[in-house]
Length: 160
Image 1 (cartoon, helix red, strand yellow):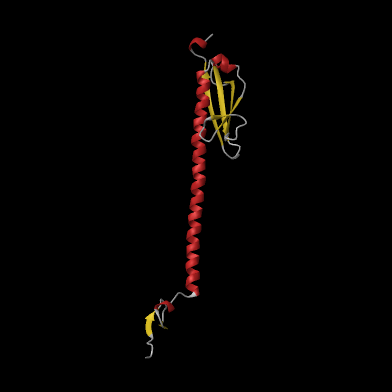
Image 2 (cartoon, one colour):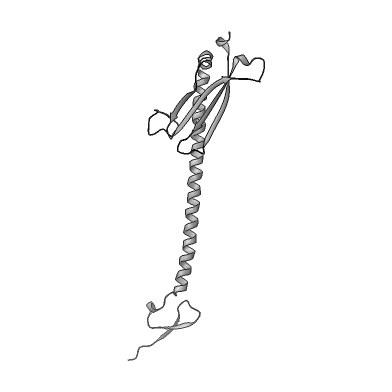
């Protein structure tokens, strides 16, 4: 008995003779085009992922920087005016969550430097007003810096 040849469409424009179902396939050009399209899609996904990671790191730095700034400002606001007025610049180190860390700790990610100076040019009562400046940096990310300025007034029992 003679085998029959079946005419069937194999995804091409013309009909080909196929002996069995596995004989039909994709041409090399079709495979290369499909791989090219898949490569562009994967590159796009990686680019979006990279952008998302950078955005996440920047937002984390901002939120931790604000938290550290609030901590430092609160410490100065709660201290007595005379103690603050005579203080020297203070450097503190913080971990990734914004909690204070030891100076030589490997967990120290952020550094804050706070300093007090006389408030000038505001009014005639500036002798009862101090200017507090806090700068927060991250040694691992030298382009990032957060600065806060606040004023501390002599009040209540601190008045002369």
